[in-house]
Image 1 (cartoon, rainbow, N blue to C red):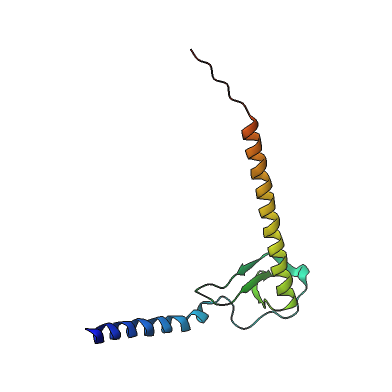
Image 2 (cartoon, rainbow, N blue to C red; image 1 turned 90 degrees about the vertical axis):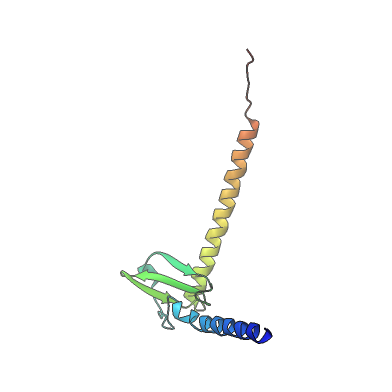
Amino acid sequence: MKSAVIAFLTCLLVLYVQGQSDNTKKCKCSNSYVGRINTKVIKGMPDIYHPSVFCLKTEIIITVADKKKCVNPESPLGKIILQNMSKQKKNEAVSMTTTTSQTNTQSSTSHHTTSTM
């Protein structure tokens, strides 16, 4: 009985390890990154993919002349993009908090009157 349990756990471990080695193949960017680029030719907002079970690294994808290019997150451009995106998320969070508190204040100050018949 113990040998069957050990064999089963060994099989699970082997399958888990094999699945982990395939995770790097699911990344959107290979190790080829765009070099220096004029930021004026970047179209739209960059797509940022944070580490996940599918890819263990942060990936930044920009659109340049209708082509998708990968940016190294450790490069100066990659760091600027990540900083700008985090600032934008903070501003959105503050904006939503302010709007929510204003709505709550307005709803709590309104008075409801009911008439009885």
